[in-house]
Length: 188
Image 1: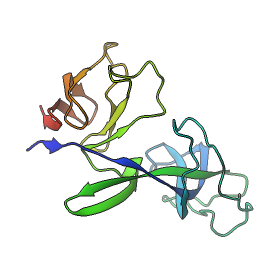
Image 2 (image 1 turned 60 degrees about the vertical axis):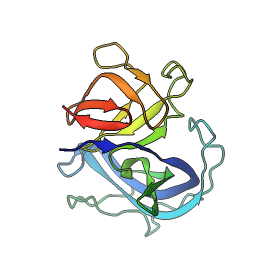
Image 3 (image 1 turned 90 degrees about the vertical axis):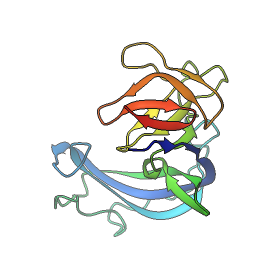
Image 4 (image 1 turned 30 degrees about the vertical axis):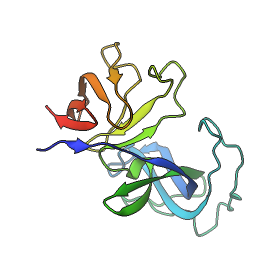
């Protein structure tokens, strides 16, 4: 398997609005969260987040009534939500990135392997020598915060400039083991 070249995805200034219904009290086999959960996109708006993504600076979307037909009514597993189940207006930042000659837009969860974004929401103690924190989408869909503490309690050492970072030691997650070398994710 060849390596995956990293690239920077940037804030588009827009956010996707979804209506989410969930029931954390009931187990669900079809949700990666382990409980009934689904969200349905309904709009794209100017970003409601402040510059560090720690909180909304305005809420651009009026809350629909609980019986509004746009709310999801059924989980992927077939569970029918009731009006007493939890609901939420969900905002997801949209990022811009290039693939070949096309500009793509996607949420953090939709970014492909190799996408790198500034993680503006993380604690100030989780930054590199440049004062920034970076998140990388790994093969298999996991996210890796380069500047966060490692599972062994240590820290990764990154050198270079985004997206051509080299990071040591290796990356080890449940779905990926490899290195980030000169901006390329190289499998172990």
